[in-house]
Amino acid sequence: MLKRQRRCKPDYAFLINTKNRIFAVNREISGVELGRIRPNSIGMYFAEMLEGEIRLSIEGSQLIGPDATRNVVELDDEESLRLFRGEDISKETGCKGFVILKRGRDFLGTGKVKGGKILNFISKSRRINLGEA
Image 1 (tube, rainbow, N blue to C red):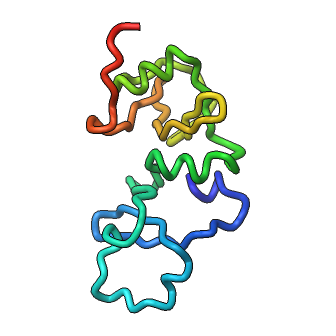
Image 2: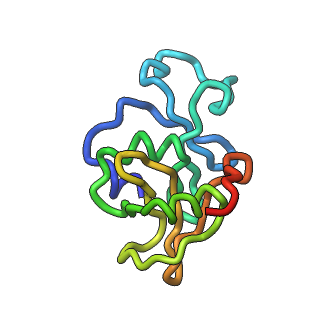
């Protein structure tokens, strides 16, 4: 997804750990010997490689989203609430694979389009109990 989304050069360098998690770091890190440093101790969790695809974190979607030209899905208020409750969203998008989810100017994270639904990838620890709408 990253190649298809981003048209300008990112201002970050990217490191990947042994669990296929990608971390964004300042480009100036190139001057540091990284042999003994774990990427997740120096960078911001940006994305994860899953079966050859990149799934952006919430923060990754916020960094990439403003420049994204494809695979961005606009949610309405009800769909956004359902997303933050941890529910999948029934929605035809015309997209395939991972998509960036947004509401207005806010980038909410990433979902995966499958069978007329957007599968929710917001972790349980980041979901919000909003009660009934």
